[in-house]
Image 1 (cartoon, rainbow, N blue to C red):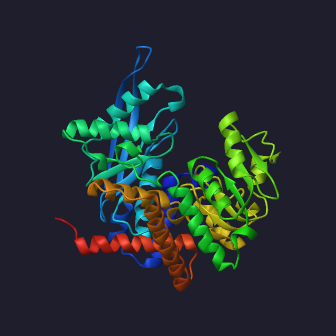
Image 2 (cartoon, rainbow, N blue to C red):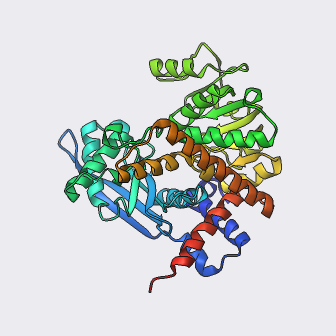
Image 3 (cartoon, one colour):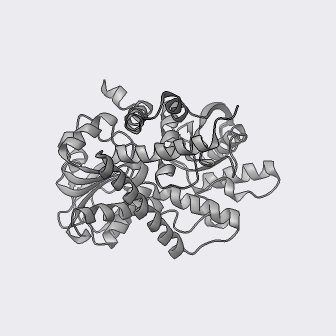
Length: 418
């Protein structure tokens, strides 16, 4: 397998699916049902640009499974969005929702564009026309989008408004990750990072480690990595390095995360931070540590560098940070992996809470959101770890087996409509 094939997210999802399905003993028919996306849509989106030119963008929405409930998954805007990527991400959402046992299926969307080169007006027109194009697929009982790479609460507000105008009434439950004023949930912004911290605490207990005795390296300092760093630091973890796309900063005694956040806000970068020393961003990933949290993009741990990792616990804050080929290398090294479909499920869990609150018309305080998130993440970690121990498989395989089993059970109970 070439490195390019290794990094294909759809192929990686397929390899892990096949491995788990074989260990579960699923028959060929069920494998075909579970593997195939339920529905895919490609839309071509004409947008009038600010300079008067008319441009056409391509967008996708994939519903991988709706066996356990409405589709759930984010929408990303990026120049390199592809249908294979969206398919893979949609399938990961199916397994992620099943692992934490919330009543959703999996979906994902994306638009090929470079939002950094677009004005707010252009992004709004793009978003509204894309929403109109996928209108028949989405809805509070069908498929609930959320923010993802390069999209945010404002984009969700535009989607919600466009959908509501078509329906003739305010339909806040059509998206999650919205502004608080439009039915957003307290605790949503911190949810994915908080979930990473919670499952890391559970993993530490298995090694007899305490947060204050644990060194952490975090790759990515955005919403997931930054929140994980902030929450972990508050719990006593020693964050020795933060790795970003343009550099890395290191302090053996632990970085002052709040000061680093203030520096990044002021300068736009973590570089030249006085509270740490600069180091090569590639080498920082291989620092000796107790916990490594890849929380940026896909395919950062591959067959080329997995052997160099020097951590005891790998907590996957990003979607797909480890390739399927690298899984075997990590297993040989004895690294305890908290797979992405468990580790970063805090975000979709609180999105579920937001959807529930919107449908109830009654909103929870932040303490209740966080306590219910902790309950689900701790229980789900135990479910995955117990599956792995009983069946003598690694955590990623256990998580996929658990998820496939739950989705397959729902399909068997529902039957095949004919």
